[in-house]
Image (cartoon, rainbow, N blue to C red):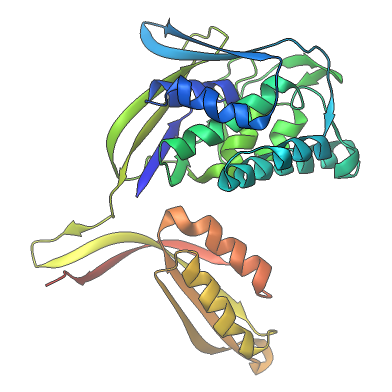
Length: 337
């Protein structure tokens, strides 16, 4: 399986993602050909080789003719629906814009259909987001992982006036994602960058075990004390197996447990099927007794860390559980003969 790891040591934005993918081998001619399927005009793509603190990188920029054009969520959905883009690219792009609309809806307390996208609704942002999805699909990337995300500090000007960094919509998109601060007084994560990476990345943290085949650097606009770059590593995923001297094979996984006493037992078959379809390595039930001697079941799932998010989504949406226990475990098993 081909995977990509985004190393966001200097933040992330839509144009930096596209720049990194171009630097890693995405052909600009291929990107331009695919973008024509959107049926939009009034823009030009600008790609240049630059250096940040001595490190060579690719700078991607969308130059637009339109000024101050605002679009609603439904306007962008219409553009995507009418386009001739591949269905998978449409699906992923719509998912990103849906998450943006959901975040804006919560911040402004408006229905999603009534949300006006300001900066995000601009032609350049539409091209940035669509280009990122096109690049990922064109390079054959099947799974995305990301480092923890550095947020800046200070204030920025936008359509709503002066707002704190990270912007409220950006922070909403970063919910449940590990972040930190290096104290750099600037916007390091743009709403576009937050939307793309929060939607597409399966995990945030350490680099997964992989055989790196391509590396790309995407350059940002600003100058920091550190190189303002986004680094992407693309390669083959390696299973976390380690052969031991005594002939066993060891790997690291995550054990998830939850006690359930208020669900129809007939639902377990369906839930177990859903868990296995999302990457569970093993799923099993243990009969237990809870307070006041109520009969119950402990549902246990073993899964690799990169699939944890999907497993939790199944548990919280399909079962009656309100919480789970999660801990890392090491498995020992017989090697294949």
